[in-house]
Image 1: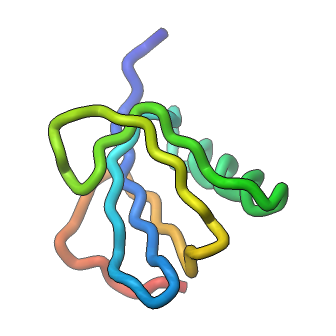
Image 2 (image 1 turned 60 degrees about the horizontal axis):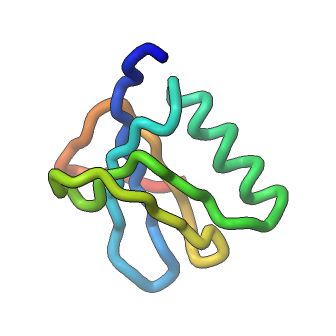
Length: 86
């Protein structure tokens, strides 16, 4: 399997601070957005198996409860400025 690029996913939870997760679970931004869309449609959590939480070095598995998330941003690179969420 070819090495996939790392994507940065920023989750903005209800009443909380942004959570930044770097992941290699998806081949492209479109794949990540489609997985998020399916999880939302099916009312289930999003499972990431190749994730790094908050720029840590270790790769871990993460389960994200999308019921508590207001918005998600997916990018190919991280930026200190999060910008506006839609």
